[in-house]
Image (cartoon, rainbow, N blue to C red):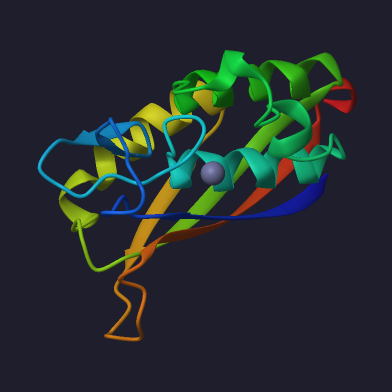
Length: 159
Ligand SMILES: [Zn+2]
């Protein structure tokens, strides 16, 4: 088995940064919250999990698998990207044992949406994914949302 770590951050949309989309975290939409800016749907939670899984399997990172320069990923559904990553791992014989993600933000509140995020992420990742929200306690992350994730993968061929 192998472990991988993933990190991601996206800035909030503002006067100088437009986002013609809804905030999406862990595949859950928050239409009343400030959206994040990014090439895909900017789902910072899904991206951290993707990076953790790719790292664990030694398959590079989200930038190598889904390049910013590729128009296919403009506005892409990150849950669908996670599903593709799960398939990539499976091709290489890897199976997700579990992943755990910490989301750092003051808004939105993660706890009320946690189960729904976990369900969406787990079904796409092909293994259990847990999510925990942490507030910044005023330490100045009003500029965007940060997520960290770890993933453990097992060699499915040895099962
Ligand atoms: Zn990202």
